[in-house]
Image (cartoon, rainbow, N blue to C red; front, side, top):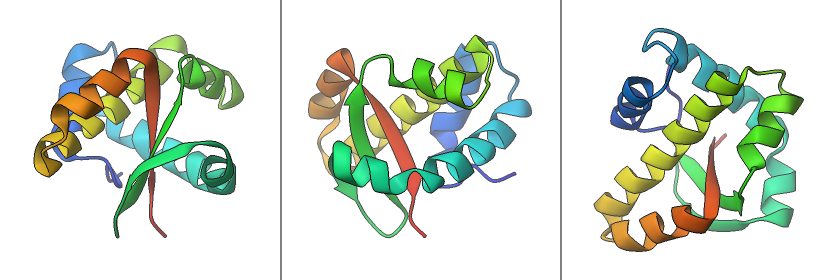
Length: 119
């Protein structure tokens, strides 16, 4: 399955740092995107969108958000942690591309990130 809106390098880095195989993580990312997309309205109403383009919207969420999503999506801890890491790595890559890397990395010190592909 495709990595969807997440930067491919971000997924590779997350897989290398996580306890989830590089073969499993892209499929997990794809399944998570379907679930996140179904909740997109909640993110648009309740969270700060720090970047949006034709490919994705990037939302800053509270710490612990991925743990809550993991429970809601019935994921193992290592799975939701890998997803959290992939979304965070995507934000860092995006920050580098936009010249906002320091700002985005600082945001990750106190918040988590959710990236939802554009329809």
